[in-house]
Length: 452
Image 1: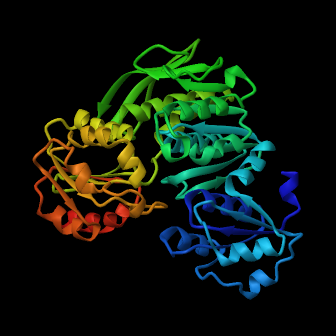
Image 2 (image 1 turned 180 degrees about the vertical axis):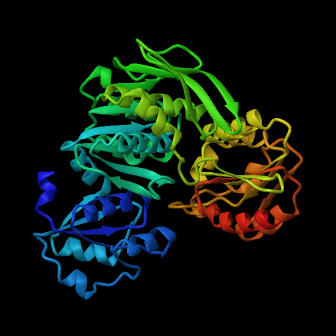
Image 3 (image 1 turned 90 degrees about the vertical axis):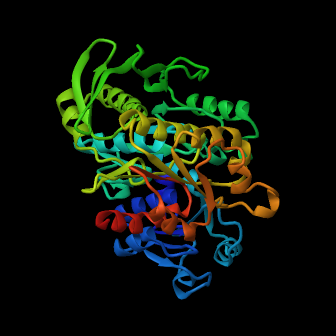
């Protein structure tokens, strides 16, 4: 980290983002002076402030910014912010300005980096690996794309020997990393606004995999062609590392884990879904290769509580079940809805889905339609635009998507109408799902279901 050591001040533009805030927490944990700007106050920015990080929500050049010595200050920004007076000021005064992905890459150059990539599954897998590292007392720092229920944060600091990093494929950011160990969970088509087509995103993942120096430290889900030698992992089929004999008992999942030379029986945890056992399988494979014994790993995996908005499940006294999930791609929807239907085949499922991005809705419309047909009842929210503008995607709306969904029990509604409509519905299980601001429904739903 020698390049970064010369800076005492770190100013983050877009500090409230999930990736930016993890970096901010890292430098704060290392005793640096951390400040930042974001457009809107959120629960996350409030927590950063509570931790001692100074955040401004106005695009003004204040006294704190004016006092910075450019030789001692690094400015870190996210490409999601296109135009900002603060950023223009730093550029005009010749401050060092780097993208978030570049800074994370510099950190990984000087650690034993464990990087988890994939269009799906990387947040759960990276968070679990970080949890196992901490429980095994490995000196590690974790940079996560979600809020760990164990850490109550998207960052954990237990030393600098290892870094556990969620390797983001968006904008090819993961090619800035220096992975010593790596996982590829999936390479489904996504972010076609960046890659153009499936072939180019697959090539991006092959370029990422090529960064790993040792064939035996690259773990790829069985069936993915990654273009080089690697180790495989799987569930319910043989691979270099695999799990089988899955069974459920009182909301706990039991499974057996196989290495090339051993079989270890009866791992148990509370994170539902076959896809999550798959994530656990590769996490166990890496930690066992780092020399952690299986007694420690068994105990550690049992205490893993998951990630906020990754199959967050609540069972109420009235018998109703509420599940909240971040899924925003058809493959992710299939995994979540499929798990619910597997474990609760007779219960009536109400799906409340908020599409994320006009481009993703357009590119995967037919697949979204087939996924959303699997629920018993559907409330389809307006598309959350994020960085996109409706005017650039004429005709791409939730009503347009709804026409492709072959089920009678469907309704399109605005976010502000949704809670009242949910209360009118008859369901056993409620699933709210999406990556936009649908999370604002969580607290009202929890309070309502607890008192129905």
